Image (cartoon, rainbow, N blue to C red):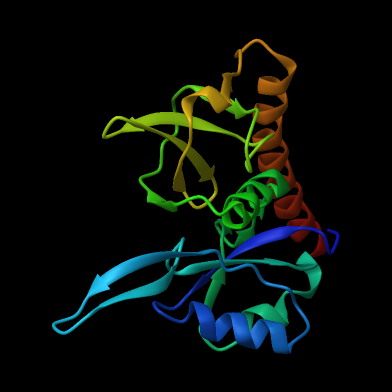
Length: 196
């Protein structure tokens, strides 16, 4: 594994910021995407920042040097298949990073596994690939982290998108990315059994 590999880290409920601080103190650069939501109290309305993926954050680290991550207060485990951590595809992390930086309104969305894949051609999200859906007459782009089975939606202009043809090389590349993650997980399992 290289230090460029992203993993999803499962943390205790409401411990995302605590774990973020501990991992930063240990020299890591974790990624905790958040979104703003207005909450009503009896005397006021307040805007609060909540984790986009409650109970999870993302971190780049070497698979063989994962003890500092696992020993951080509040960390439950590294998301994977069985006991073997599975990396999150870098394209999915970059999609979420681009969305957070875009300035568009976004929020958590129920996970969608099937739908029309589109590529954004204009605006702050140009180049991103996701699913398109319609909510209350507005078009929304759905970006997914497949390993966590979680999604995020952002409101977009329908004229910004171009459908991706399932027979195109681009669609094949997206599908092969998921296959690479599965084969990487299998190689880690076989590596573990050979070392034991």
